[in-house]
View: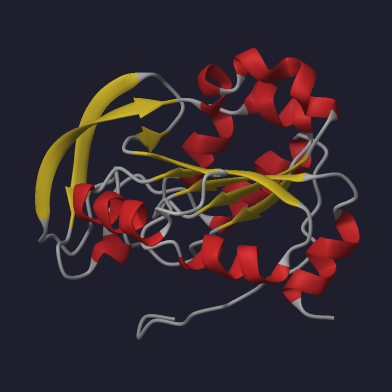
Length: 196
């Protein structure tokens, strides 16, 4: 069974996708093509050039909201390290290899953003996709109440090698999710680097 067949089997109600670290929208694009009953999509992308590209790409889809800020575990402004030609490496965490440029971005928690939708929790099946280049555990910690109330399916990047200063590693994310009554169902789209 492929990833999307598995997801469709788990989702029973209208679907609300939350795409954190949307970058160029590939995940949302695939989700739209393969998942039934999508009602709403919220996309979060702090890198300005990617945000503009997302706006152009999904311009005609009125059920998609695109936001130009980062998601984390507190509502603050913080440094964001970005790469114009390799935007997939951009992160709130400083890359170990250096390089890139820096800007200041706004960060919000999912708990803050979705605190006003408590009645909608029962109406939708939520799907939370995280790809924040080593900052995923911070995003999860800032979504503790949202996760408890909405019980989303969570699709999260796991990093096994050091790429960013103070990054969260796969075992930390898996342990945190297990402490919150989640289980790892499958690994998908595994990549290797020259370091392993």
